[in-house]
Every structure is written in C-alpha cells, then in structure tokens.
Amino acid sequence: MKHDLGPLEELLEQRLGLSRGSLHLGADLEAVLRERMRARGCSDLGDYRRALDRPEFAREELHVLAGQLTVGETYFFREWQQIEACVEIALPERFAARPDGEPITVLSAGCASGEEVYTLAIALHTAYPGLLPHRIKVVGVDVNPGAIQKAQRARYSEWALRAVPDDMRKRFFVRAGEEVALRKEIARLVAFEVRNLLDDDPAFWRPGAFDAIFCRNVLMYFAPQKMAEVLGRFAGALAPRGFLFLASSESLRAANAAFEAAHSHGIFYYRRSAAPRHPAPGDAPRASRWVASIHEASARVAEVARRVSPPPRRAAPAVPPAPRSSPSTRPPAAAELAAIDRALTLIGGERFTDAMAALAALPQRAASSARVELLRAVILCQQGDLAPAERACQRALDAGDAGDASDSGAAHYVLGLCQEQAGDAAGAAQHYRAAASRDPGFAMPHLRLGLLAKRAGDLATTRDELGRAAALLASERQERLVLFGGGFPRSTLIGLCQAELEARGGRAG
Image (cartoon, rainbow, N blue to C red; front, side):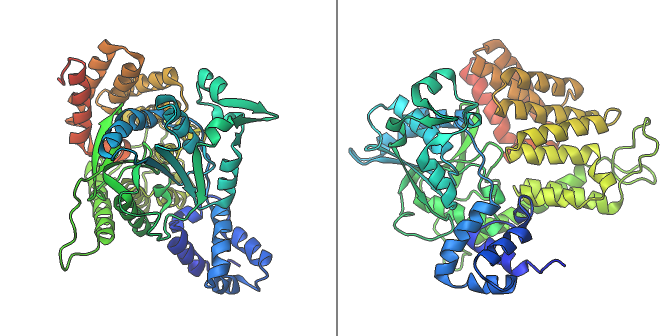
C-alpha cells in the first residue's frame, strides 16, 4: 500500500525547490525515502518527516536526498555559443564597468559535477591568460555534495568530453587510467561549494556580487514559486546590466521584470535591468508578481492551444481527422484533449516535468499518438535527454506517416535540435531541411539553418534562410511559437533575424 507522500513532497518542494512533478520522474520517490528512513533509524515515513524538522538532521539529510532525487548529467563545452557570448560580450563590458583591480565574478548555479565551471575556466583562461583567479573568479555551487566532490576531483569519463575539440582536449586534459583528468593549472583556477539556491545568505548573495550567472537546466525542475524566489535572488546579486545565461530551452517568459532579453552569437540571454523598479507601498513582493505572471502566461498558452486546434468537423472533436490508412483509430476523447491542452500549458510555463507527468497520465492508446509523442520529444529535448527525445520523434513519425504533415515537420525539427545539441551540424541541417520540406510554412527550421550557415561562414545561405525565417515568422502559428520559440515572442525572433541580416548586408523580405 502506498504511503501518503504529501507531507514529504511539500517539504522537498519548500527546501529543495523541486516541483512535485519532477520528484516522480526519476528514481522511485517512495523507495528512496524508505531507504533513507531505514538508514536513519526512523520507524516509518511519518517519523522520518518529523525528524526533518530538526535543523541538524535536515541539514545533512536534505543534501543526501538532493543527490538521489536530482539528475546532474552534463558535459564539457555544452551550448558553446553561450560561453562565447560570455567571453566576447559580457566580460569586456563588465571589465569596463568595474573599478580597476576589482575582480569579475562568474557564478555557475547548479553546477552539478563541474563540467560547466571548467568549460568557463578554459574559455576565460584562453581569452584572458593570467587573469584567473585574481581578476576573474569562477565559482560553482550545487546542492548535491557528491556532485561537488566529483567536481573537485576533476576526473571525467570520455563521454563527458564528447563535445571538446581535439586541440582543446590535448591542451587541457590528460589520461588518468580509464578516466580523463583536467590539468591542474586549470583545476586550481575555480572554486566550488555546496549551496542550496533557496538558502538565504546575505554575504554570498550581496548586491552586485556577480557579473554573470549561468543557471542552465536547473529552474525547469523548480516549482513556480521557488523559481521566482531564485530569480529574485539572482536579480539582487547581479551587478546592474549583469548577465544571466539559461539553457537554450529555458526562458523567463513573463517572469522578467528585472531582466531584459538580449541576443548575439545566434543565442538569447538576459541582462539585469540597470535600475529595477522598487516596489511602491502596497505592491505585492516581486516574487509573487512573477509567480502570478507565470500563471497568467500559462492561462494564455492554454487559450492559444484551444484557438489553434483545428476546427471541429460536424460531429468530431477539434483534432485532425484520423489517417485513412488507420480506419480503426478513434478520435481522442474530451478528457484526452484536455490532458494534451494541459501539457501545452505546462510547456508554455516552462514546467517540463509536470508536462511530462500530464502526458504519462494518458491512456495507452492516446499516449502513443503522433501528437503526444511529439510533445514528449519536445520536453525531452528541452531537458537535454537527447537519445530519448530522438526515439520519441521516431515514434511520432511512425505513428503519423499518413497524418498531419505539420507534425511530421515538427518531429524532424526536434531531431535537428537533438543533432545540433550533440554537435552534429550536418545531421541537424539534414533534419531542418526535411522539416521545411514537409511543412513549407514552418519558420523555425529556416532560422536554425540560417544560424548554422552563419557559423560555417556561408553568407549567401545565411541571408537566404534568415530572410525566409523572418517572412514566415510573421504568420507562424502561435502554437509553434509556444513549442519551439524558446519562450520569446514573435517580434523578438523576427528581430534576431533582422539583426543578423543587417549585420551581413541583407534585410528581411
């Protein structure tokens, strides 16, 4: 018989920030809690929950739980364009803003086992030799003590180095038995510490403490209120006009009162506003405003999803008709449509684990449809689970061979995103072209093809593809922007295309 986990789920959300949906996607939550209950000599889960009210017990135990309930898989040189933007845009600007001699500080929040921190150190050491760690400080924090211990050890598997260029591998890594070790001259340039992003520490989070913060693939697992709390902490600790880098699949969406979107190097990131508005008497706290705006955005996404669903046929629900080659396929029931709408809403609110849980609750027949497999692939890709995302895309293609061409194009687009994240630009381009061919009105494949061409130095293709993307974005379906626009509005995506075109002597059509 399942024990009521509600009180423990509530505590884990309050103390670690993890949404209830995220707690049930990895390890079996009840099995983990019962194992820890026995290890600490508690008689039952209720006794274990009461023990967690004791500060000393909780301090140690929550660190253990964080290690068992969170997944910190990452790799070196992940989303390299963001590192380039930090080195080439953020750091020169921050040096100019800091008084002489005052160090620049870059924080990796939720650094897992250290790959991101060391990638930053390698990039900064290469661009600014001799300035680390005296003029440029790189700090990594994570709630999981085991991950921090691994980071301090600075030894990794070959798989963690899969995106490292050969010249960088030879320069900064050495073989250490079956592992690969970071050279000591790089390892000693950074600092790590165990830290919960929800813990208030005025000294660490002092105003203007950080010039840039990287927090990638972390906030998506947080409950909305806790996400807003952490964003507020980041805003207070960043210097005016400081930089915030989220994963490419994440965005602040409506929760950006203290931040402004910026773009360069073909990617988006955020700047802290120079003078954030201070609450007037009677105003709600900013965190509460952000949470409210998140829920308002989710409601708008739900309304968008309803508006863009195909109009109902005479006696059928508002879904595409079943393929003729599958006469036994029944249209989705109203409850199934509602679950899919809820998943779209959750995706629009960056609540990816909750969206996956909503899809998992569907009956088997609905769960294997092309549309649901596509949504599952989108979520997995945004969470960095590339191999499962690719398998979901293939299932979507198999299920929709005679169905909606737009779903087929979207599946190829997500396959392209997976290939691009894995470092296979040629494979990504092949899938983007397939997406554009199957759905000629789909703007995003052209945008990605243009950015790939830009990195390859192909000016003509860059102009052609970004021009097409800008033209198609003007009439792109809102549902597509929700799923594939990274949370950025139509005008911002068009602005990116226009800025890149103008920089290369072209213009949007």
